[in-house]
Image (cartoon, rainbow over all chains, first blue to last red; front, top):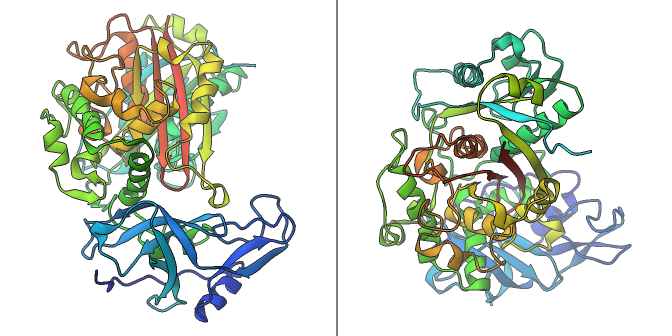
Length: 129
Length: 390
């Protein structure tokens, strides 16, 4: 239940600066192609579906479903890693936080929550909705 | 153009060590190289092609080519496909031989993660900050173990696979390892032992995970004329495939591996079906790795892997698909955290009739080696190699 695990700072690059700028404002954006209209993950400047560079950082609903998860019991402070399929389409690697690890199930509905990293922008994670 | 019948595996060597604090990585590479040359009855000066991967010290093949003092190199290849590299490199060697680029190819693997105390499977590691996905994986604590666990959890959800079924994979490997004097874990275990071992990352238990070992191995691949002059059992390469399977922009199926692409390519080139295979070396970083590859290679339907591996079906002399008769990565060794080399070596032993008598498959004429390198739960490399005894 406790979420005291230290989150390493994500490495911000010129390519993903806009994503992390939004994250600093606790806005969850999902990169979406202006040409083929598809959202993708992980964020990049070139659309993985059509190759266009017209990527827009669209405000996302922050809702999704657990596609799979695993509680890392071996860690000093156990944590839940998961893939969450976003309402916008793509699935993203993340953590499920503020939850009873034993109650986690594939298919559960979750919503985004930003967790502070050690000395970088906050990182999007999810809690049960 | 095909590699079918264009090259033979004439030399194999698996280092007997499982813990080598007294040896350097380069030294281990050299020991396995000379071991495989001895097995093939060839000498260092016969080598004109050198193949290695990311475990070779220094960038690419240069440092080891110098350390071994290879005098006649005219073809090199250091394709890095993680643990599956050596399965693919055997095929690359066959390609080079088929094109006349070299006649005698040396492939080496060695490393000592056990001596170096690498906490391999359970610690998040940032490998290269320039990897474009780094910021979107590292902060979440992705490790080797929980990445593979994500695949296992989804497979259980989607197909009803159970921990007990996964445990059978370990049980089968342990039945084989009891006959291997070098195996790190030579004791036979039960399904109960596996499911009662501590959970590492749900749903994977400690005994679902492979060992961490030092060691290495090497192969010598040669052109047909040379193979036939050596008066050694003839093991011919007849088909191969390789690929990268990844997250496809966030639209993926974690229950499928790259073997779904590399496997059919290898079978097509070989002109055979999965049912023709008498022995299979299947990469076993975790039990789930084996199960998913078995499905993807076509040994059973997708989703039926749990039933297929249960009740000893992978045990030599008992089941329909004898696998990893050396004990595999789950029980024997996993040198340099890379199991592809030993997968090829045990398949060659089976085809030669040189496996331990207790696990030797009768009349083993067709064998397969399957490698999955890097992270099944994100992006991984897959290589399939089919070999035939002539």
